[in-house]
Image 1 (cartoon, one colour):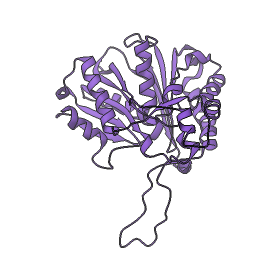
Image 2: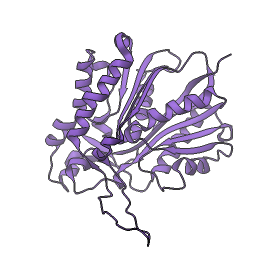
Image 3: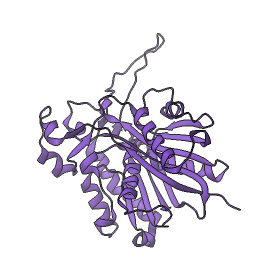
Length: 323
């Protein structure tokens, strides 16, 4: 008898501090009208005293509470992040220690804004090959990696985390179709955290910016060209039967253009970027949890939902879920 993964709980956590566009206009040469008209973002959450592992641990604790699961029952913890507390230990290991999941193996997955989609795909395979329960979390504190003097990027990003608890109790396949992809030849379009060679034996050390940098036009074109094309190829004629699309919350104009290219009503593309901005690997799980909380989405309903992430790497990926 084949084993299927099942999402039994969703959760999200956002820092309390709300920073509006008007707030940013006090420290940057920008305005609410400029930001909103170009991105659809009006405010974002910014961490004042919590690191990425703290946000992810709050999500983990909520997932356990909602599902009635003990931390000791978990087999794995996967955290998708591009803003970890450390290079090592992994953020997932910090979460494992904080919640007492002593039997779980744990690791981070770095695929930027595609991270949660990649991680959920990996976790579904873990369930199918023997694991019984596990957490998949996307979490970011991007406020610590952006250049707060660069208005082209500082206005876009926010902090937050979201995730799901998977079990092996599914009655049908959770992932019906998937497509994961990458193109490292265009990796310089979005970078963060560069570290120079600094050993006594290094022949040459090229200094680069370590804060987040992004070629906005290149990313915009990449999404409308490559990401949309791959989504169309994956879905085919099935596109019209998808109940909702949960795409990475990068830019409202991107979602509008993708909907038009797929010839689908905008209402099927859920959005929350106006309140949270771009939280990279956390946007999709936060949006999923919000949809569940509002009743738009329902676990066990067999609704057809597309999760799609795209960003640094360059990476992109799509999952067709049957909730």
